Image 1 (cartoon, rainbow, N blue to C red):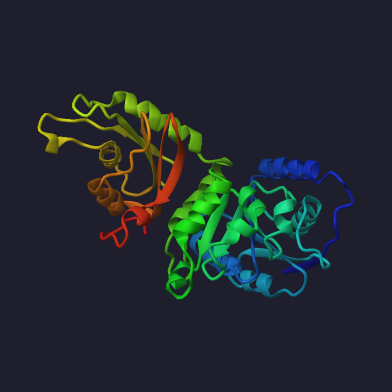
Image 2 (cartoon, one colour):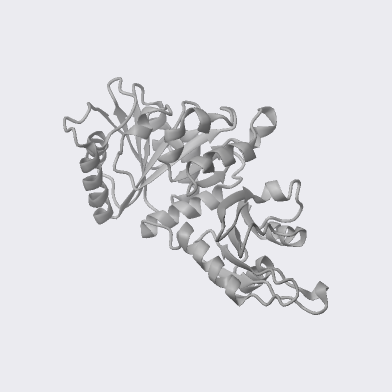
Length: 349
């Protein structure tokens, strides 16, 4: 394990340096993930779980950035991942120049390289490190008001990992409230509820990381899924209610399946768009889904009780339910909010 001391980049154009580093790493086949959080949120524990779970599928390297000590880097090295300890000389963040120095010194190969940034929710959000993906970790012990206090961190992140969910009963943390506040700041934010100790929600997070590593971006974007759901409602057969609904169902790997509601003169035989999409996916051999987009002509079409139960059967983690229409902004709730204390296998975890 190497230990290096860093100083602030002499250039006053960090953004330019960051973009150059991003492109260079992409050419090398490296996906750089900038991991940010408060001290004690569980970043190193989360990384340890990811290394144990994914180490046989992809090369993983870790840059540990701290003001002092080598505790975290030593813990990572014991798991067999290449690591380097970067001492920031008292600075509370990493910038692009510092990240490049640490990366070059480590000699990482292609794969996923995690930068475990200095622990705080202010400075790391202000400096582009050259990462392809920015991930924030928020533990349930920290409080659900963090989006109100540190908005920039949530605005600049691509994903939010709410960690230590196995301990949520011991803290006054409202996941629904934290999720809503985060999405108000950043509607495109991917949110994962995980416990590194029990592995709850880890499959969804790790599949997302693999997707980012293989393609540099998700195969289907948020906007793509909204468009597919909106297109699907054009195929609705709803001569009785005249309420058209389309759905786009997404697997953790990024595969998508659409569906539209179709009614019957015997009303009980009517099938909702959500179950139509699930049937489509099942027919193609898929059994695990991470999110669904539901579109209608006006207002919102939240899933009915039967659809909520069907989705719960095949959910991956705490499934994202997105709803919207042409005249109503898209919003998201977790399946656990719509179906509290739901029962079923939850095939995806």
